Length: 216
Ligand SMILES: Nc1ncnc2c1ncn2[C@@H]1O[C@H](COP(=O)(O)OP(=O)(O)OP(=O)(O)O)[C@@H](O)[C@H]1O
Ligand SMILES: [Mg+2]
Image (cartoon, rainbow, N blue to C red; front, side, top):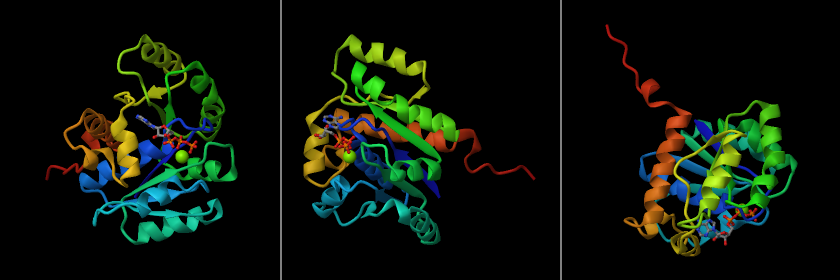
């Protein structure tokens, strides 16, 4: 079972929105996905409540103190991907999520404030020696700000591809209890999320190492 956590103290950077769509995209690609929400704000619990689709990722909001037990239960129940959403504040829950994750994703809007805002998270992850990658989110479709932010982030760590553009599909999909790949399967937002999931999956388990069959 692999665990990914969306983390950054910077509020509103796109943790919950990106987590929901990535969880759905992974489910559509055949993963058994459980989403754990450590945020009392309840963005993902509200989202799952409004879902009408019969199939998809499962989701539960839990307290940080229950994380370890929850992960053990999910492993026993044969889930193979857990997506953790965390609050936009420094808290014991965020720390617990970072510790339990195979890969942490730091959504970052292309602004100087977001770049600065994610520094404490980066420092914590370096201290914990956890693999992490930035995800550029809510990017304007055409702006050199994205490249400027990319350059700033590249000095701090790996950047996941592609950047996620700011699109109404993300907001409308969340409101409808869907991932963007369900809401508008052929749309640009869906395409970016599908590519981002491929990037994440490859990072979790590089292609060359998947299903390696040894020659007799
Ligand atoms: N790619 C996107 N395109 C357009 N809007 C987006 C995108 N990603 C997020 N948003 C919007 O930005 C706002 C903040 O997103 P979200 O709630 O996912 O951030 P968050 O990091 O989880 O916030 P918090 O720190 O409060 O938990 C929401 O209104 C959401 O609809
Ligand atoms: Mg959130």
